[in-house]
Amino acid sequence: MSISPDSPALILGSLYLYWHGIFMACAIALGIAAALLLAGWLRPRRPESPDRTLPVFDTALTAIPIGLVLSHLFYCVSNFEEYHSIGDVLRFSEGGYGLYGAMLGVFLAAVIQSRLHRGQTDYALGALCDCLAAGGALGIAAGRLTGVFSMDNVGMEMTRAALCHYPLSVYDPSSGHWFLATYRMEAVAELIIFGLLCALPLRKGRNGDTALLFLLLHGAAEVAFDSMQTDALRFPGNSFVMMQQVIGAVSLLAVMTVLVLRSVKQEKKCQPYHIVSSGVYLALIGVAAWMEFDRISDTNYFRNHGVMLLAMICAAAIGLAMYRTTLSVPRDEEIPEKIAV
Image 1 (cartoon, rainbow, N blue to C red):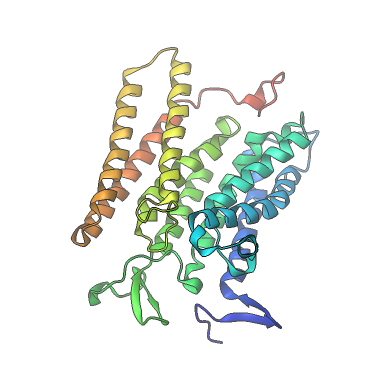
Image 2 (image 1 turned 30 degrees about the horizontal axis):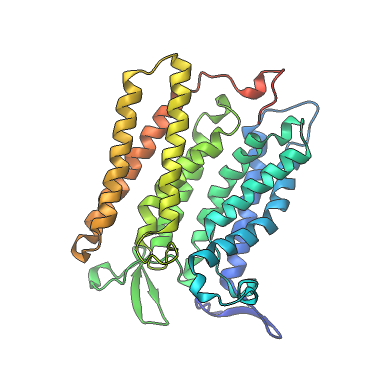
């Protein structure tokens, strides 16, 4: 059977089911399955709650419809010129979804479940976000690979014959050209993030630490890779500034601020390494921003993105190092009289 990027997998009357949609649904299912499995590993066993996966499952079911709506609205805001009426916006079957809208939907679902089960530690907001963030990284990795069917998340056209090969590039049969396979790079980055979230000593941290580090690592990946895409979502009325790249940079700043303040509180005072680390961290984000604005010159494309990627790797490493300085702080859930949020 031949599968082309734009070929429908199933036709039911006027309903067309495409391969891209099928594999995206599988990616979502994979992310949920990973979150359920991680629920037992990231969260301690509680005698009064033997089924530790139920809170995560409840939250995932709540997140699916909310995330679907918000991710579509996120895309509509970025591409408002494509939608001329409410009816156009409500055509979910025609596609158009943004990742950060889905992430917001997952967070809101966790908030709803934690409020509905107020006082139950297994439904603590931070604990729910931990499992969903780690599982979500694997789901995002699988979802990125659906670009092979939709030709989404691809980069510039590759004109040099030496660069037109797998896995660096992807061939688009509809145009007859090769493009930079950015979606493969993003998938590999998310797999690395998933591995780090599983490998780091997160059980020693607080509820919410896994989600916090996910925002750090995912934000770095967004800053590094989003500008490579030719179809990246941009702010309305702006053809240059990418929405997800800016949100990623804000995530980097917010997470580092939380980690530094937590470390300073633990040390009882601001240490020299807090100042040095923060300064280098900000400088790396500045280097990435400089490379982004300098990439307008095509001759500097690979150099600029290489420097940007290296800067984000170093920034993520500094963030992880700062997190490790806070690991001696006891888990909120280990304090009997305090319920983690």
